[in-house]
Amino acid sequence: MHGMNAMKAPSDWVQRWAHLITPGGSALDLACGSGRHVRWLAARGHRVTAVDRDADALATLGDVAECVLADIENGPWPWQPPQQHAFDAVVVTNYLWRPLFATIRASLAAGGVLIFETFADGQQHIGRPARAEFLLQPGELLQAFAGLRVVAYEDGFIPLPVPGRCVQRLVAVQGRSAAQALAGAHR
Image (cartoon, rainbow, N blue to C red; front, side, top):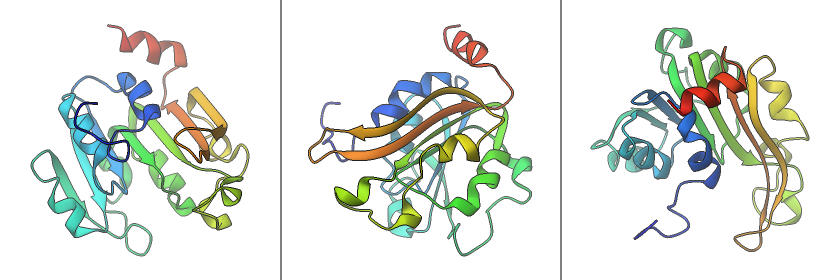
């Protein structure tokens, strides 16, 4: 993207699969950090909710998203119950907090799309994160979100940018077949 460095560019995984999100639909960027996906999704017409515990990062996103300051690891989920505030998409990148898996699933609206990408086992041999609690085990996302319709899944090493990284990636839909999700994206 013009004017964006590689660190600020949206994940290629998010860019590749965002077409599955209902046009103009709501999207939750969980642990959004600097907001690279928040801004990218908002620019595509989605109503974005940004959640993070970093008030400074959220302060830069208020012009494009609903910002929710929350420590989702040590405090309550911002919406109780999660189903009452369901999203057309939930995006999670470079973040892992296993106790939230069920809540993430419950936060998907009917037909909602989960786009998840984070570090996997093997990353500890390349760089950070290196602690096991921050690295997915083989097949872990598939197990955690069993019952959703898997559209795409990858588990392996990505060589660029150097030194590369080990990741696990999942795109899955709530209550739609992969064929319906893909067909709906081309309407």
